[in-house]
Length: 308
Image (cartoon, rainbow, N blue to C red; front, side, top):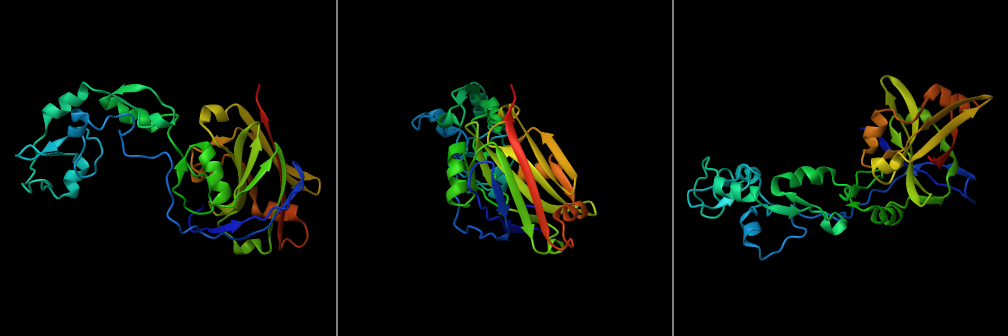
């Protein structure tokens, strides 16, 4: 959602795929329930045996995550990670001695000789990595959980795509539509009241995959604009297999956009700020709306297709 913006909900009236959906706006209720995070866990826990003494030695006693250099120790040999050394104010949490700046070089050397599985092993990654290469891999692992793509409120839920589809439908009440063409009408009674706003997300099931349609108003420099764009629920390499087009117009004039949907690995804000979508200046949007330009009635049509 645009900084300082308000969240708006669209009410879609649909009859069948490719038909006309009218989009109106209302306030979105923020889910105050503490979100769960499917598919997440502490670093380095997947695929490790609890009775393995080496892994137990490498586990920080404060945060319980696996430790990476520099590994610190107190004069009595108790170890902890560098992040927690700051948190405990340089005092050993086990014996209360001052930690100082002693490094446990022996344990760092032992870790260097280990090979460990990816933390996302239970999500499908079965590769094994040297201990010190594990974190770098996990930052880009294609099996790592996705973040909820909902843009109407801050949501910290993560999970695989099937989990997020159910989450969007059940928790955010997002409208799901089957088909690869769409026709939406975005309505606002007084568009001058809304400088930064996000309409509720719409998800399309197309080619057995899911695509998120975003529409919002924000300031581009000093100019108020509307923007529509599509995100793909999957990785970037899969997103490149698809293309989409958006069109808006009236009175014999139209704007069109064609591009590749961005992966939901890229945040909603990142896509918006990169201007990777159909951008409509407010004055032109009101011209397309007709009438006395006091009400937004903007019709956005589009389609999704698969590249051969």
